[in-house]
Image (cartoon, rainbow, N blue to C red; front, side, top):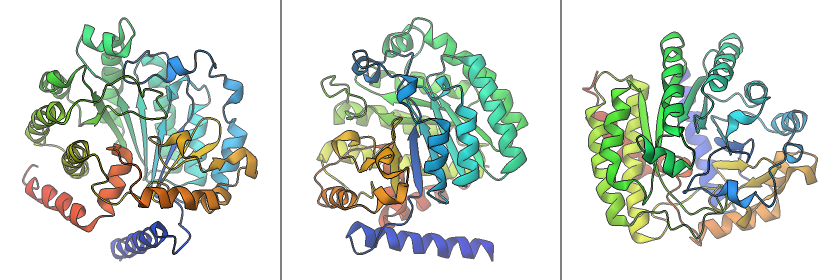
Length: 383
């Protein structure tokens, strides 16, 4: 009965998203909220220039939303499904576990996802452990995933991420967190790779190493030009031919590793396998391949309280500042500016292979959702 109720609820929400896309209905709360808790970062990545952009405009802690401001924002919202935390480097915030606790209290997410550069193994372990203990005492059904980033092996990682010794620190972070996966059923340790022109030819080698570590879930994203990253002039995005070759090898490694994985992980991997094909199609055709629900199914809050439809458009298409509306999320979500941004997206005036948004778009597109379910069915034999 509960499963049937959830299915009907999700179908109703999907219908409202579709009506909202045509401005026929005010959009409900997004299913996915991404919150960049800070732009501070110790990495000097060649694929992301947040660190360089803010050298002349320091990422001061005083400018970031305080814990009290964050609670006011969260309490103005309601239940979501996915809570993605981003940065900068999220673990640089001393109050990071408190932010997660507030999300659990006010947003009631089902899944919390945190990427990290992995440069602070001990600090990351302490904060993740504190989060897991809080989740298990207050919200035991919530899944927490943490994703250290690995874009190369050895010196290649150090070069791409711009930090000497980065590879060793990331590996230490992975190995430090692995025991938590064994002790906490609601914890998923992932590893992520950004495929760029700097590493596309080495993806199978990186994937083989990651799987040798015993990682449950390994994913990749395409290096993108985003307003959020201030990286418009970097040329880091691989060509369709380069990405196509890399992703073919990555898909093969992913399928090889499915044996023995949990049903939850196999469903995630099925969605990602479909996404990789979608990303390649977007890269080749340079258009919205499926309808985009950015600013409807998903929302993004930056460290300073601005709402974006997504991190690709970021401040190029802001919905407004929460500090200007007394931290009332819905006031901006239902604003005239938000309607204008959604209309622009609906007209196809932008396109991108952004993974976070693409997953929602796939689930809201009947054809691509069927592809995902078919992919999962193909791998049902992997126990």
